[in-house]
Image 1 (cartoon, helix red, strand yellow):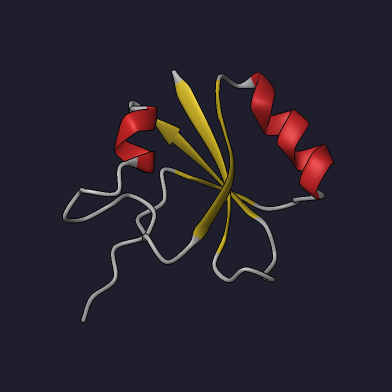
Image 2: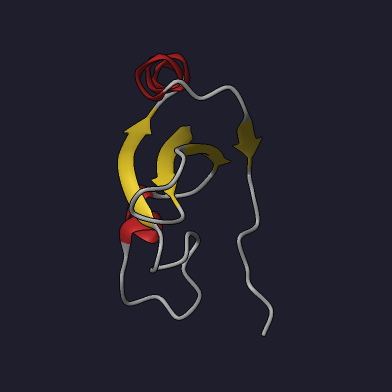
Length: 76
């Protein structure tokens, strides 16, 4: 099952799309995880479960590039 997430790095930033395989929606939106999948400081605009959301969100937010199973871990 694919989970499609549309997010922004800043409140007025450009929309990006990430597509995850074998990840639960709860793991993405959980604010209590020590190492969240998408950093807490970023804004999540839309989350959808299923491949149909890839095309839908691409048209809605005018997104051309997509990242599959991205790793957003930030090294300090």
